[in-house]
Image 1: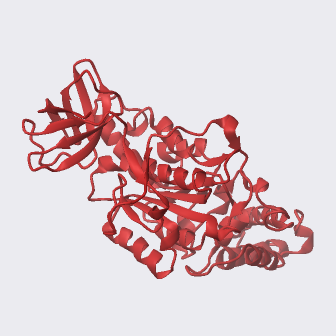
Image 2 (image 1 turned 30 degrees about the vertical axis):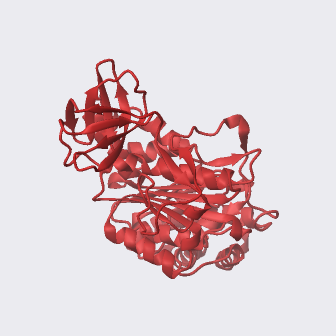
Image 3 (image 1 turned 45 degrees about the horizontal axis):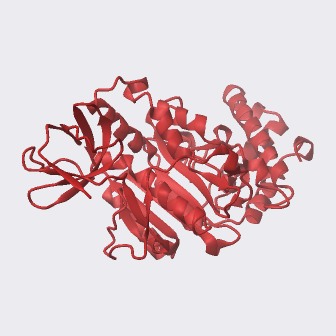
Length: 444
């Protein structure tokens, strides 16, 4: 039985306050019923003896303190799920916005799922092929891994995101799905993704949850949780291999900071709440594989580093939780190299366990090690050339400069619609490494 209360005590931004009812519980879903009959969803975030604070996900515009009714649902926020969610577009709280109607024959799931129990986890194996040489060859994405992309202000990471979604596949591609969470995006960006999915025939394997920049910022706190609840259903109920892409986690963190400020909490680093780490962990740790399940959840969270500062709380805390990172470099971006992946700042800590003869190719590990080693030597040769001039370099250093240019222009740089298989990637790497003298290839 649902219980209703009339009137509110106060409204502060996206938060409303009412006298604490006896029947209410923390994190309970509530509905605000306006005089017009409109209903807005919220949930309890502060529960004191006298006053309860509720965050309203559709915002508080147009709400009158005296005329609104508060209805307690007696349960946390849940979303409707079935296999029919594939190919659909939802808003940030899981409501369909593509005009195709409600989900039928559904199950309801609480969005506040717990992270996986470490004892029940299965070690990640095998890989997801993105068709992008810098990722597949040098920081391979392993099923069940969480591998973030660190971008910078003004660097267009949306092209890379779209290319990954369009090209990503596994050996059994029929059992593969992508859950895409879009937070704080411009309308043009959302349309760009939607049109790309339709035109390239991948819409049927993608579930999209989008929160736009003109949507209530408070809704962004829900978007990754809703997306991951959907991913868990597809992976562990339907035995699918699911890739979750969340962009931009910086917008999520900004929404957390906004709510924390309204609640009057004491800020931590750069104004973010002290529990930012645990909030990130509750999202990132929902990736992985379970021993008694066939499916898997792989995560690529994407974030923007303010002022390209990798020590900023958002990338810093993300790096503590995840298994590596892919860093986009401004210098490469300004050279016109796409995707501008700075491989020396990037790594995949689980890569060694998902490549090799059984999964990719026997020589994959050696080729990767050699590329990292040789490209590191390129930076030394370039620094020396700035001091001495290129003409005074040794023949070996000149070869490294030639290798560096070929590596950036041919291997890292690839066309937006160029989808390379793992064999094409490794063969290209060997071709470029042949620029160097054989005695320099000490990792092979």
